[in-house]
Each structure stands twice: as C-alpha cells, then as structure tokens.
Image 1 (tube, rainbow over the protein chains, first blue to last red):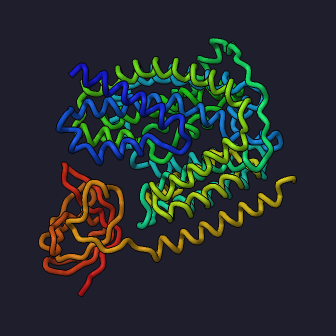
Image 2 (image 1 turned 120 degrees about the vertical axis):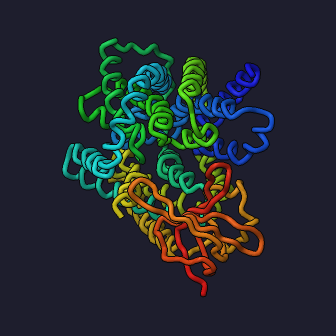
Image 3 (image 1 turned 90 degrees about the vertical axis):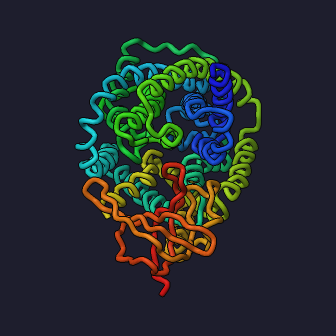
Length: 401
Length: 118
C-alpha cells in the first residue's frame, strides 16, 4: 500500500509538471484519461491511490502553471500596461521573482486552506443551502462588481462588451453537441493562444532576466493572506468563478502592489483548489474539474480520506515549491537567449495540432474565435478576467432559464 | 492607436466565429449511435440514439422531479435522464440527443433533446 502511494505521488508530480509547463494542457484532461482507464487501473490499485495521484498532480500544476503564464505570451511595451502583473515584471527582467512570489503564495495558500478546512467542514452544510438559493444573484452581483470597479467609463464599457461576447461564445460552445472537451479550445484560445499570437505579431524582446531575492514585508504577506482568505472562501463554493476573479475581488477591496497581487494570485489558486475538495466532502458538490473525478473515485469520501489527501497535498506542495523555484531559474536563463517569436509560433502550432485531436475539427473554430476575442481584449486594454464571462454568463443563464 | 487594424480584424473574426458557433449549436447534431457503441471512452460526449421506451420512473430530487427512462434499441438498453419531464409513455419510439455520464458505475444519458419518432 505504502509503495503504491509513493508511486502515485511521484507519477502525480510528473503529470503535474507536464500539465503545468505545457501551455494548454489541463489537469482535467489527464484526470479524464485516468477515469476512462479506471476499470483496468482499479484491478491493480485502490480508489484512494488514484485520488492521491490526482491531488499530487493538481498541487504541482497549481504551482508550475505560473511558469508558462509568466514567461510566455508577454506583450510589447505598448500593451504592457493592460497586461498581467507577471508579464509586466517579465518585461522588467523580473520573471523569476514574479514566479517566486506566486510560489510563495501557493505554499502559504495550501497551509491556510488546510487550516480553514476545519472551519468549512463544520459550517459549509449550514451556509450552503442559503448560498445555493441565492447563487445566481451572487454571480450577477459579482460580475457587476468586477465591471463597475473598473476605473473609467470607457474601461467599464469595454469590460461589459468583453464579458458579454465571451459569455455568448462560452454559452454556445458549451451547448454544442458535436465537440469533445469544449473547455479545452475555449480556454486555450481565450487565455493561451491569444497572448502567444500577440507576442508573435509584436516584436517582443525580453530583457536579460535577473535572479533577484524578493523582499516582501511580513505586513504585505499578512495583507495578502487576509484578502485571499476572504475572496477564496467566497468563490470556492460558487460555480464558474476562478482564482483570477478571486484575486481581482481581493485587489478591488484594498489597493495592493504588483508583488502583493502575485502572492494573492498564488494563494487563491491553491486555496480555491483545496477548498473545492472540502466542498466535495461537506456538501457533496465538487467545485473543480479534478474534485469531480476524486468524487467519482471516492463517491462517499470520508473525513479520514480527505485528511489523507490534504497531508499528501501539503507534502507535494513543499516539493512543488522547490521544483518551481529551480524551473523558474532555468527558464530565466534560457528565455532571453532563445528566439521568443519562434518559441511562441512553435507553441501555437502545437496547440493548433492538439485541438482537433482532443476536441475534433469544430474545436478549431472555437480556438480561432477564442484567440481573436482574447487578442481584441488585450489590444483594447481590458483585463483578461472579463473573458471569464465565457463560464460565468452560461452558469447565470442556465440558472435563470 | 498602432494596432487599430488588428483590433478591427480580431473583433470581426470574433463576431463571425460566434455567429458560426451559434448556427452549429442550433443545426448540428451527432451521428446516430447504437446503445452498445456507448462506452466509457465517450464519457461527457454527446450521442444521438433511437430506441423504444421500456420503463419510466419519476424521481424526486429536492423540490423537483425528473424522469429516468429506460430506452432499448436492437443492441442494448440504457437509462436516459429527462429533467424536462416530457410527457412520454412506455412503448413509444423516441430519438434522444444527450450527454453520456456515469452514476454508480453505470453509464447513462442526460437528455438535451427528446423527439418522438412516431
């Protein structure tokens, strides 16, 4: 049994590195493949071992996913202001520090989520029925809040346009009956290939990357932690809302620096992921793709099994932290030496080949549309989080209709 | 604005793409499969099947009801979940388009569209 657990942790770490470092490949895809072959796998192992594989992969993915999202798809100086804080730091030669900040956030977030879970296991069954009844109104209020907290009237207008366009795109893509894994081309287009295309079209020249030590005051970490606990607790029990929205909600309440934002982003990423397993146990509602699969392997997940998963998550998070730091250092050395334009083109071709294999030919239409909308969003200077209308608007419409 | 051409181009492609996807979502359907062709590899994908209703159970879920329709074709039979509570009867021939899911190790179809065949 112990050997099986260790093997599944190692394989999970390797799978998490694969999904985290290759743009467009998501943990849900690996979890789906695992589930499809579960009959054969369960003849040689146990459901908890498969769940341990999933949680190990998830935690490593949560940490390493920030490496390609910071180092790839950076815009040129002209659009840099509307871009993500990680890209802005990369353009200043601080890609390593940006990744390290998210890794620090992820690690603290993991510990905080495990402590918080004690509270949520007891309270979620009490507050969830109320939350469930008011969910659609909370999602509408949340969407309006994000749009209305944009600074100027022009920004508010474009945020609304992007939210609605991506919402229509998401609604009809998820309604298609002739596509497999619709979220793959949708999210790859909106958040991945759009940024890579911009990098390819614009002449992005990355400066020499510096390996700097990040100096963050304890006060900043505490501020980030309080904001993350607040926003992650709010969104972990809601469908259609991701960690980017949680980080934006957090930053909307209190002005925070670029560096603190990156810590918050890391924290909410690991917290929302782990709290989705708490939601599976406490209210039987998995709030992430991977929690759905853990729920399939462990249909009546016990408190003991949940704690085993959390202990594994903590151990793997510590390993993932050091792996991320090592990988980010190597990425920093390598990224300014290679032809960035060619690298972006290579990944774009890879994603275009992968899409029909995973989703079928219609997936290419979704990919092209998502990519165009993502490019439009970046070039008009609107924050990428409004592209999450692609998931939020369908959830709102399905609840109302 | 330096990228004005690219902004306009990306907006046009986005809108055209969305219109194509709206049409595809309304008019395209999966090919007809037999029930025996449905397996775990198709999980979460949509299928279209024709068959005869051999049983209907009305299930209460919270404050709502849904139907579990047992559908049989020449090859096998499968449960179809109908959340719309269609007015169906045993021995009727129907066509179902729905998503394959799994409940307690059994594959089932969550109906999106149900059409009477006769």
